[in-house]
Image 1 (cartoon, rainbow, N blue to C red):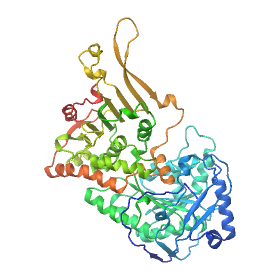
Image 2: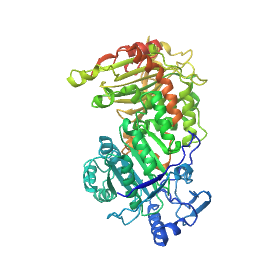
Image 3: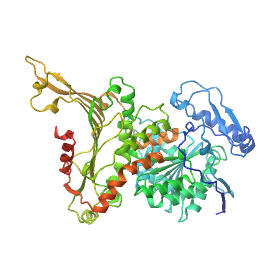
Length: 600
């Protein structure tokens, strides 16, 4: 293969400045206003214009669009490209994302010899998405199906280019067969399924990376450039690779596969480091080649509707916003449990365990979104600014406020791993030392191999002062506690527990639930969390992705207690599969004046 000369850009300083992410698939101009005619030629310009019009015909794309385009040359000139007048029905959220981020359009300049391919598509790609580690389980079972679901529903343009990158020896057809085996159409969208599937697979290509990522990324860049047809396009790279391979892949990608004609974004999977120090080193290496706004640290659990509903429920309902503080809320419970234990070997009994895998990202991000102050706007950076304030305000976690558990199994394979004492269950009491939440315990528990799948947030309110109906509840005062429940599993719902009179003679009170069950109210299939988060990346919406300072703050919360656990070799409490978990979790809750919901 022809050589690739790379002129690397100087390492940027870590920055958390506000990102002006581009609108999804918006056309990107290059060094000057007449970029298309100078580089692509008249034929390419006309083809791109017709293709862009076709893409914009789907609902939500009709507007008169102005794009401010920043130049890549030293002169830094700015040009404007104005599209034709289109129909008008684009949502306000998309209108906010028309401006390209300079950092996303100024990657290292690449020089390469032309490579001849025989698969030039009829329409050049306006966006290319590369899945690095394409033959792994994550890519096969989650990433590719999510991309197809977005394509099928019209959230990806018809001219998208999908690329699989792996060390395995495969052809384009081999990758397409592998992907097809895991693809299905939406239950409520069966029309034209086969046609859409064939179209999607035709836009899918494979790159054999070999064993040198520098050469592999050069191949990927050449193949992408060929599919893009020398026209302006944007690129997304999903790094579905093990943590030990992350930096080699990411740095090779930065030097050899970024486009100079649009923005570049990379998606990184959790866990984000093994310790605070190792996470910091990885972050610094990434920031030496990428800008902060290019990096999307993905946690699929944050793509649930439960998480998005946190801010919607609070900030759009007057009935809840005044109650969201220590004045009215007695405690908050964040619960995430899994019934099955299929991922024990790879995820928990390996080196990372449940603290690094679930608590560091999902649990702490949920608490941050729940407890944050109202952001200035819905812009991702404004929300992340508020989240990091919460994380920095979390009190140091003491070892006596932590319960560790490990699933008790009889299989030889699991018994071999239990000697590592890696926890599969974690419960803790956390406090946020700020004016809004001072003294309110946040009880968290998460584990695998428990009695059922659960993902919910329970907000228990304080008792009514001087409640004149107190005696009607008998001796158990907890029965008259109002409670708001946001649930994702076992079924999506919003529940509000209130006290009311039982119909009939006499005065008997009952605690009832006002419920909003999604399956009864909304006749739609809830999208997979990967679909939600991938669409956010395409939109440039980063509020559900951890910024580098959020990452460091989360490690600051957990590092001291992890160090104590490792240093003192704290043995986790064993618990039976299908049970409620360690008994000590209930003593911990009682210590902080809380009763877990499954006690009631």
